[in-house]
Length: 252
Image 1 (cartoon, rainbow, N blue to C red):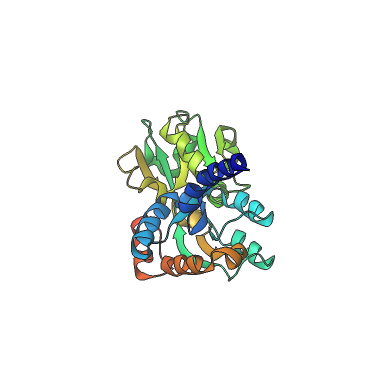
Image 2 (cartoon, helix red, strand yellow):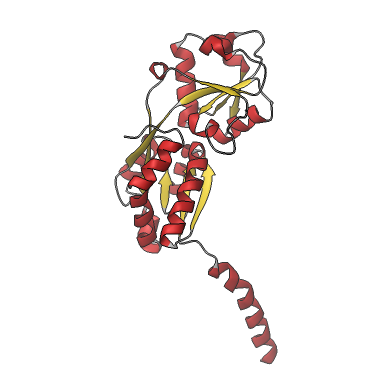
C-alpha cells in the first residue's frame, strides 16, 4: 500500500508542472500570421495575465484537423473561405470576421534584378521559385493567380517549388534553396526578417484580395470560452489593429 502511494505521488509530481503551465487557450495560426501573432500574444498576455499557445501551419490543414476534432480555441486563417466552411459546418461559436488584408511580395536573397517586376520570374537566371501550396495555402493560390494574370504561369510552372505553408516557402528563400519566392508581406516586414534580402510588392490588381479572418471555435465553448472571447475581442481592439498594421496588413 505504501509503495502504491509513493508511485501515485511520483506520477502526480510529473503531472502537476504540465497542468501548472497549461495555456489558457490555444490558437491555430496561419503561417503568414506567425510573426504578428507573436506580438499580439505578448501584448495580450501582458494586459490580461492569461497565457496563449500558438500552433503554426497552413489554413487548409488546420481546417481538416478542426473538422476531425483538433483542440483549438481560436483560428487565425489566411483567408475567409476556410473559417466560413467551418462556420457552415457548425464548428464555430461565431461567424468569421476579417482582421486584415494580406499582400504578396517577391522576395530574394540572391542577386536578382527585382526592378523588372513580375517578369523577372521568366528570366533565365531564375531557376527555382517557391510558393506555398495552392491546395492548402491561400497565399499560394493567389501567387498562381498572379502568374496567370501576367501570362507567365505556363512558362514558369516547371520552376515552382511548393512549400507546405507560406512559412516553408519563405524558408526556401532564406536558405537560398530557390532564387526567389512569392510570399506574404507580413513575413518580410517581421522584426527578425527586416533587412534580409530584397523584396518588392506584387501589384494587387494581379490577384484577388487576401481577406484574412478569425473565428472562435466550438471547442472553446466547453473549455476556454472566457479566454477565447477576450483574445478574439482584443484582435479587433485599437491595440490589436495597430499591431496588424505594423506587420504589413491593410485594415478592414
